[in-house]
Image (tube, rainbow, N blue to C red; front, top):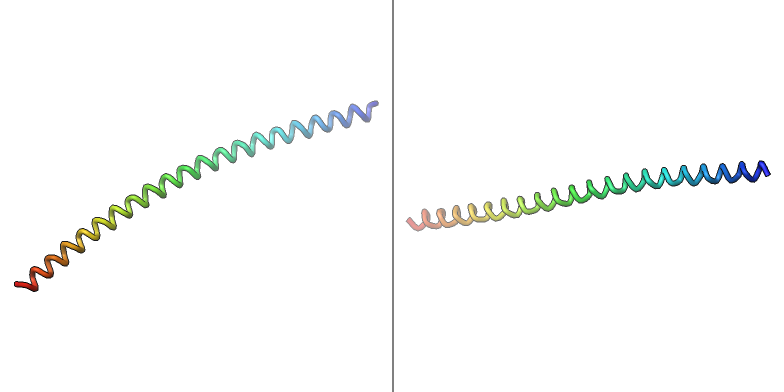
Length: 74
């Protein structure tokens, strides 16, 4: 009988340990998801900035080409 109670206590201890591990892993997963979403948002912001910078660069290039053509025509 003592052996049975000992095994039951060991099993309950194992269950408690596994629950703690599950909670810790759940917390780590939540933190990882938060970081992932933050990085995705930052990446999207940088992508938009790059698109704006590229568009402005294209505008400047276009204006310089027009100016060059005008100067050639003079």
